[in-house]
Length: 249
Image (tube, rainbow, N blue to C red; front, side, top):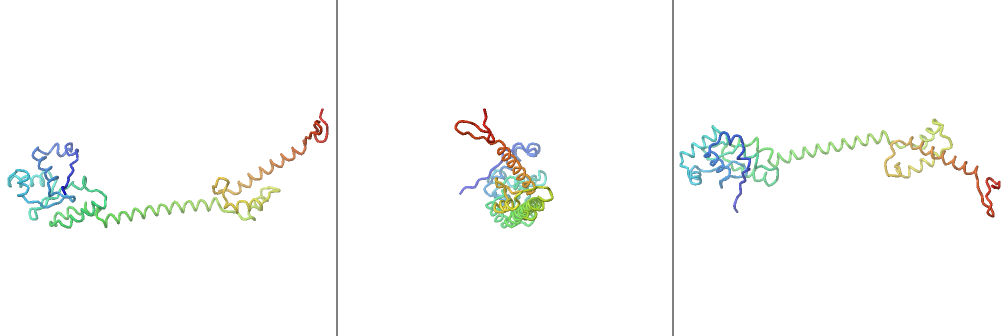
């Protein structure tokens, strides 16, 4: 299966490439990024002879280019003993935070022969490794869990302070202290106790004392309405209207 190596269009507007690279540099750099030996790690083994064949340069030119790229342009590291090249900025544009990428990087890292290049790669390599990634993932999950527990505990604390369920004795004492007379405390307690201390909309009752006052006001209004209705009792007998027993003209 053919391999593909992508080169971002930003390659042509990179200030370092625009200001410091000659046309020959650009050609050779594109070759290092895309030749068939290049891999996902950005560190691979390739012989001088192979580079000569692919680029058309002679051996002397290739060696000069490698020296320039490492010591002048500082975009690669080359180990002449193992014939391995490490492209410094490769990881920025080609390493993805995925299991497939991590497995590929780990496999290729283990194949690197140069200890010098391995030391240069490790700072970029470690966070992408399965163990490093899993550790980082677990830390994030732990942080999220702790955050959720903190929010939950905060809500529980708020509910416990504002929504404490009263006893029947608490209700009776409150009514007595606030001159709330003829209030059916037992009915009020039984009603909300049976419904889990939630209102008609299903919301937790945060202030039961306020509920008692609301109920009491309704009771007073209903009682006044009954009294007013009983004071002015109207009846119609044989087509004649009577108010409180008296005939109206």
